[in-house]
Amino acid sequence: MTSFAEKMAAELNPDGIPSLVAAFERSCGLHGSDPAFACLGHTVSFSEFKHLTERFASFLINELKLDTGDRIAIQLPNITQYPIAVWGAWRAGLVVVNTNPMYTAREIVHQFNDSGAVALVVLDSLLPLVDTVLNETQIRHVIATSAIDLAQPERAFKGSGSVLAFSNALVSNGKCERETDITMNDIAVLQYTGGTTGPSKGAMLTHGNLFSARTLSRKSIVLNKEGADEILIAVLPLYHVFGFTFNVVGSVLFGSLSVLIPDPRDVGSIIAAMKEHPFTNMAGVNTLLSALMRHPEFDTVDFSNLTGVIVGGTALVKEIGEQWQQRTGTMLYEGYGLSETSANAACNRPESHELGTVGPSMLFQEIKVISDTGETVSSGERGEICIRGPHVMKGYWGNPEATKKSIDSDGWFKTGDIGILQDNGHLKIVDRIKDMIIVSGFNVYPNEVEAVIYGHPNISECAVIGVPCSATDEAIKLFVVSDNNELTEDDIIAFCRAELTAYKVPKDIVFMAELPKSPAGKILRRELRELT
Image: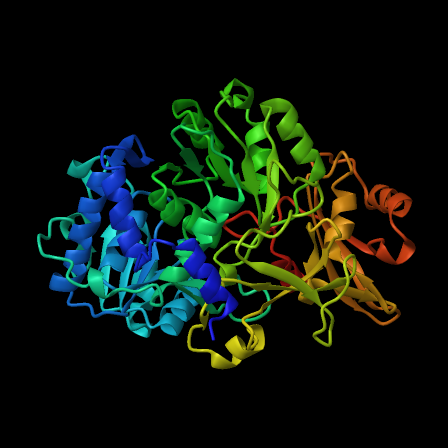
C-alpha cells in the first residue's frame, strides 16, 4: 500500500524526475548563462557551476577512487566551493556530511567517526586543528581550499604534504558515470542535529527528501515577484539545515542567485552585499536581524525588491518584527522546521500571517499534536508536535533504536517540541519538551518567560533555564544581556512580577556580556546549564 509520504512525493514530482542530480541537470540546462553563486566579488553561472561540479565529481571517482555511498565531510564557511563540493559529491554518488567549521576537536571526532567519513573538504585555516585529530578518524583524503581560491586563482591554496588542493581537484577531465544510478531513495546528506537532548545524531536525508522539501516549500510560500530574477542573500550557514536546503539545494533547483556571505558576524559585509545586489529574499534569525538594524548604514539599503524574510531558529521577537517592518516596508515571516524534516514544517505567509505563531502547515504534509499517551489532542491544547510527509528523514544514521522512537509505523515524526494547533490551523510553538521547567508542580515554558523579558527596554538578549531547588523541585534562572550598566536584578524581578504569575518569576539572575549561540544564532540553553 502506498504511504502518505510516497503519495505526496509523487504529486510533487509529476514529471518523474529520477533524482536530485537529474533535477540539477535540468535546471542548469534551463538557466545556463544566469548567475548561480556570487561570493567575494566572483560570480559563476549555472553552466560554469555544472562544469565545476562535474570536474570535482570526476576527481572523487577517478583520482580518489571513492565508492558509491562513501561519506565526504564538508567543513567550509559560505563560499562557492561549498555548493561545488556538495553537488560534485552527489554527482559522484557520495553522501555529504555537513560539518560546522567552528567545531572543537571533540565535536569533529564524534561526527567524523559516527558518519564514517573517509574524505574531507576543509578550509585551509582549519588544517592545524584537523591534523590533531586525523589519526583518530577514518578520513583518508583531505582536500583544502582558501576562501579566495575562485576569486583569486593565483593565490589559491596549493596543497601541502598529503593535503590535496581543491583547485587541483577542478582540473580532472573524467566522466561522472554514476549519475544515472542515483535515485530519490538514496541518502544525500547526513545532517547532524544540534545535540540539545544528547549526542548529536545524523539525520539521513535522501535525494527525495530534499527535492520534496524545496518543492513543497516553493508551492506553499510565494515570496518572489512574477517575472523578477530571484536573488537570495545567503547569511545563514550553509552547513545548517535551513541555509543548506535554502541556498545550496533550492536556489539551484529554481535558478536563483545566492549571494554567499562567508562571515555573517561581519555585519558590514552583509550590508555591502545588500547594496550591491537587488536582493529579493533572505532567511535569518532574531540576533542577525537585530544586528543589521543597529548598523549605521542599514537605512541606506534599497529594500524595494525585497518580498519578505523568513525567520526561524527561535521565536520571533515582536519588537524586532515591528521595527523591521517600519524601516524596510517588508514583513518577517516566522517559520518552523527541523533537521529531520529537511528544514520544513510550517510557515507564515502573506495570505496567512499571525504574529506569535509559526503559521499553518506547509502543503503536501501533515501536522498533528499528541498527548503523553499518543492520542491527538483538540485544537488549542498543548502536546508534542508530530509531522508526516515526503520531506521527513529516512531515520538516524546507525541508530535504529532512536529512529524507532522518533518515527512511528505510520510515518509520523515526533519532534520533541511542545505546541498548540489553533482553530485557524496556525501552529504555536510552546517549547522543547526537555526545556520545560516544573516549579511546584506547575509547568513553566522558557519561551513564554523570555518573551515577557524581551519586552524590557534595557534587555537585548535573555535565556531561561531550570535549576534544582529543594523547596520547589526546580527554580527559574535567568541570563540577560543589557547595555544599561545601572540595570539591577531587583529592577528585572519587579518588571517580571508585573507581567508574570509568581511561580514564573525568575529567582536568580545572571548578567552576561553575551549568551552562547549556535552558528545559526540560536541561544544555547544547554551551555548555560553547564555553567550552573
